[in-house]
Image (tube, rainbow, N blue to C red; front, side, top):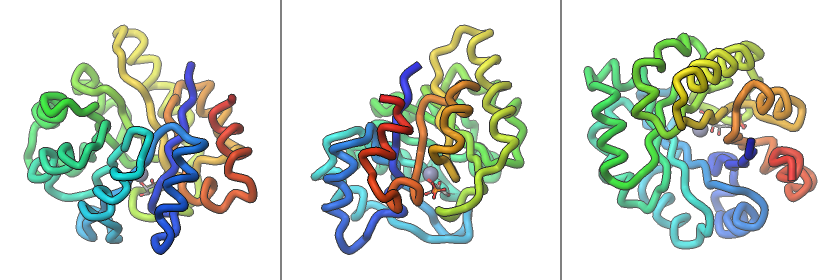
Length: 219
Ligand code: DX5
Ligand code: ZN
């Protein structure tokens, strides 16, 4: 299985974004872009201007993680930023009384890979009815909202259960993991079935980001 690293730009240096974009271009696989609205999560990050600025210099696909209350209102606009992957939270779709399957297919119709995200308190089984509509699922290993939180150990079992279901049904759906990912947990996460690894603080604070990237990617 291919291990891909998606540095979370939430932990990048906002005043010198260009340098951090160049660094990710050099040693990672994707740009992970966390959009927070201060309502779905108790934090506000960034939106269209920053994503569009990064898009100009990004040589790797952009992976947008929406932590917003009304994803249905913004899917089209985010797809126009040049993002290759867009995910929204299942909890947000429920609260907005939106059918997740319809939103996922909407993303696909825009030519974007469609992802569904859940926080650590949502059973992974809740994703099962939508797996056919997902190009990837994003399992939060911390509660969405902030970088630099501690990895929740339950995540291994959750990913394993999800991976077994994906394989049993012969689906083509990747598993991404986000929150507290580090050199210490990446091998076990890969063993249970994760392939896309988001890393914010561990990547940007690493003494040697190239070495960190090698350790996460396994190559
Ligand atoms: C949290 C975000 C993450 C965050 C990860 O809500 O979705 O992408 O930036 O940061 P670390 O790797 O520091 O936990
Ligand atoms: Zn994220």
